[in-house]
Length: 184
Image 1 (cartoon, rainbow, N blue to C red):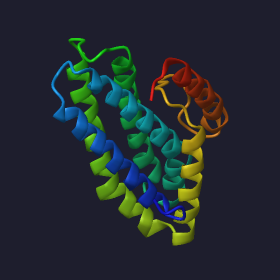
Image 2: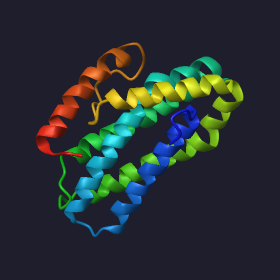
Image 3: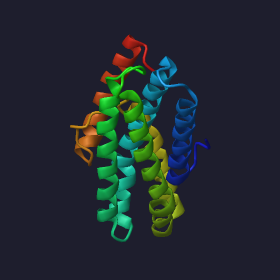
Image 4: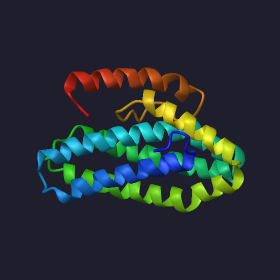
């Protein structure tokens, strides 16, 4: 990824990485323990991605895109739904009877969300914001992902300023937990 890429390129790249992990999960047989490892990996990526979008993308959408508040609220609802699914998935092993159902549900939720963002939201953002603003947002999103949580926390705030204050601390705790458990 070009370190000076704009926010749309950065987030689209994330979408591609998540889809690659989904494809790997789908290629493995039900009950295979590698499916759980990949589910944890995709959860980490999705949580970091969502936190960065909530901190920087959606506030920019609210401010600069026509009907931006409505669009941002819909995207936040998608995030909340997916985060609850990830939280349920977190407690399942690959051979758990609910694992496959939850994984399919998450894939469906994320794929629909990505399609909507890439077909609609990103186009509107590009039409509404100058290139230098999109590049600046890309830098902020990259920075936010470095300190973001890696586990789903459905009860935490998803709008600034509270999320920008709490997320780095939660992220630190998550990364310590990940290191201690060997996750990710």
